Length: 412
Ligand SMILES: CC(=O)SCCNC(=O)CCNC(=O)[C@H](O)C(C)(C)COP(=O)(O)OP(=O)(O)OC[C@H]1O[C@@H](n2cnc3c(N)ncnc32)[C@H](O)[C@@H]1OP(=O)(O)O
Image (tube, rainbow, N blue to C red; front, side, top):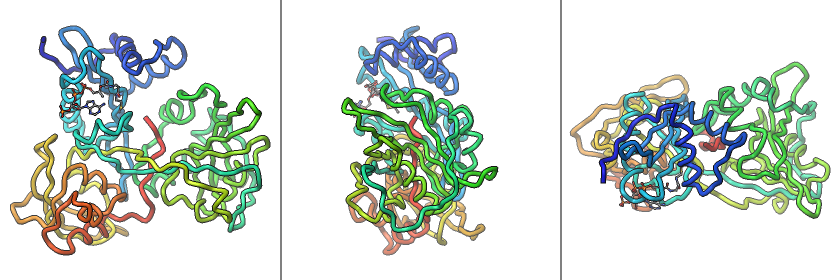
């Protein structure tokens, strides 16, 4: 077998890369708007190709993302389009592309990588672990939504999708600053990932509908983005993908709106945070049910020291953390974290140390807790981390905690 080489796919070969992607994902070779959209997305990515001679046998693309982390944001490689030719499976092509990605992350100063999985069994071995989780909600909209608080009564306004980024971008940015795990959305991202005319997975869905709430001429106090669908019997469903509000009353008004649309019997809200306020605000819990909990964003800490120093911590911390990492051996070792107050929180200075560790955990477990989702005491309790100094896990957990749970709904 000819040795594999990993190199950037030149622009002239991006159509070949798309053909490989459609082959692998068992699709027809789209020749339409969807192919154009995929091509545009690929052009914005760093596209790594695995070549056997001149033959392209593997593709891995990475978006240059900015991901919100507690108290700030960090550069993050958003991995997508992962495809290996069916003739070259299980020969280490993906492993080779991932190793190439780690080199590129180091060169580009990206301490984090993230992805959404196609199958949950693939990416743990490369150090990825779910760092945000989400709910799918189902709301019975055949009757008025019963709420425990009074909804905000400011006017609602339908916004054309093409105008939406300019109108709701600032509200999204404010919401993003409150929760870790969220991707910065520029015009390209809004158009290609959030509000494309057609839904890639379901032809039956309407174009995106965006509704804002707030005083005329003022920045919106909230928005909801949804698509609708009618079944053969004429029953309508509204699928909510994004709803952000500056207050519970605004959220209540938007949920009330979307459940009151004529001909809509059911509202399905995908990818809601686990601390979704509606679950507390609804007066009849039979009307709003959680139908699914799923791992959303899978995170990989590519540079441990930069990631630990790049977020804000909620409590003082001074301990030695031992991290194991077979995939990026440069990460493995002991780190002393010493915090100093910074604004409302604390920043840590991280140095390598030979001192005994207070806590040992793997790179996957670091990803699971990094954005504030899983606490270190749970990792110790289930045997995925080892506490050497009593109280070390509780200390790390209280420092890593965030006011709101991390949340991601930007699928890429
Ligand atoms: C972020 C995204 O883009 S998600 C999309 C992922 N892509 C797909 O699902 C498309 C269809 N599948 C493929 O293209 C390929 O089979 C891939 C990309 C999943 C794997 O590529 P390969 O080149 O075969 O992987 P590679 O040979 O490097 O395998 C590395 C390890 O992962 C394991 N592995 C590979 N695929 C899978 C899988 N689907 N489930 C579980 N383990 C897997 C291999 O057994 C191997 O394990 P080992 O190191 O213990 O021997």
